[in-house]
Amino acid sequence: MRNIWILFRREFGSYFATPLALVFIVIFLLVAGALTFGFGKFYESGQADLSAFFYWHPWLYLILMPALSMRLWAEERKSGTIELLLTLPITPWQAVIGKYLAAWAVAGLALALTFPIWITVNYLGDPDNGVILAGYVGSLLVAGGMLAIGACISAVTRNQVIAFIVSVVICFVFLLSGFGIVLDFLPGWLPQPIVDAVASLSLWTHALSISKGVIDVRDLLYFVSLAAAWLAANAIVLDMKKAD
Amino acid sequence: MIEISHLSKRYGALTAVDDISFNVQAGEVLGFLGPNGAGKSTTMKMITGFLAPTSGSVRVCGHDVESAPLAAKACMGYLPEGAPSYGEMSVRGFLEFIADIRGLSGERRRSRLDDVIARLGLKGVLEQMIETLSKGYKRRLGLAQALVHDPQVLILDEPTDGLDPNQKFEVRELISAMSKDKIIVISTHILEEVEAVCGRAIIIASGRILADDTPQTLARRASSGRLEDAFREITLGARPDVREAVNA
Image 1 (cartoon, rainbow over the protein chains, first blue to last red):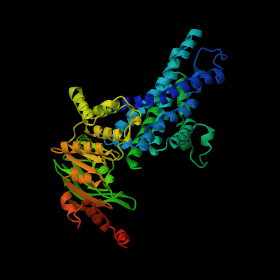
Image 2: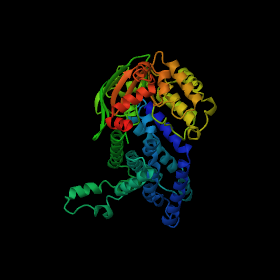
Image 3: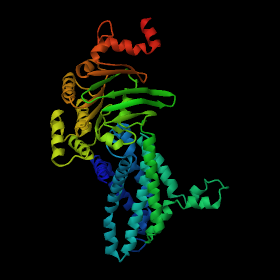
Image 4: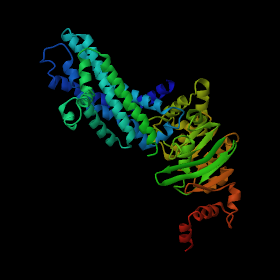
């Protein structure tokens, strides 16, 4: 635990040592605001809730989370510090988790800074704050799932641009795996249970059901296992591809 | 001590390190010599547990690097090739991070940090971002991070690369001063360095050990009595094609 904390602190600090975290947070707040008030018709809907706000988060994350995760391992590889890091007396797992949590914390911080919109709906009306809290939890979980995917992809390459693009594509597939745009790619002869299984992998569906205010154990389990699977893959990739 | 037995590393068809065995005792400074691509760095990466060997084993301070990596890594300090460090951190922040992850705390943490900062002359750049440092400072910082926990075993991959002559001299003095009770393995292609600091030299080429002796004895192998000529004869002798080309 101590080692994870030390690694987390270093990684979190290095997000803020460069303008990256700041740019990320500012862009997140601007775009989230624009989507909510522009496309989401936040005022026009006349309802005191944040569904118009949370609705756009998965789309926003599709671009922003890979931008946050792309450097996690690719940069270590490029600068050679991966050799330093992995010859310190730590396990690869501690490094994987420390880095992942640091990226997630930056995303969490950006999300937390949207609190003025929560104050606004409470000022304007009488919203169900339980549902809003669930919306925040769901949004944070989607971010966490995408960051786990991005962290793993970042370990595959030393090129951050490649890490970014591949992560966006994979996150897109996971986001929409319940929808026609992804399911149409599956060959028609696949048995229905497999198609259903692919459809049930959709980040979107699970996030939507949480944001309705019900935190179901199955949805939580989905996010935990999604992140765990990608982080396990991250550790394996790291071990296999240390040299290049 | 370091015990290396039948160590090999293959990448597909390429054999980078080919069945090498040797031991290093406390108090020894071993110079690892060889042409570029000879397998020096690969061997060091396997000793420090960064790369897993294809076959063979490495034991450091009695710990097998593959089966007890944390114990083995804890007793080693390592300067990787090119002295990589986190550019966006300050010198102080980086050294403190290393001290923390090495498990130092309290008074010992402070005294060890003060010691390496003083020894490597980093006092003036403590608050500077690492990416703004000159090559010489970066190398010294790399050495400092390897020394923070006062390790039993030091593995230094080209420790004086990029330093000016005065800095080279200082680093050699530093290595000599530490050598009494430690095991130090340095790789280099600067032969005068080997004569200056190493009590023993291993010459490797194409992944094999070609010679293992004191630098003085090795130098006597050449008719001129110079280590430089001995190195050339030994390493080129391993590759008949090159030898013919040189002689022609």
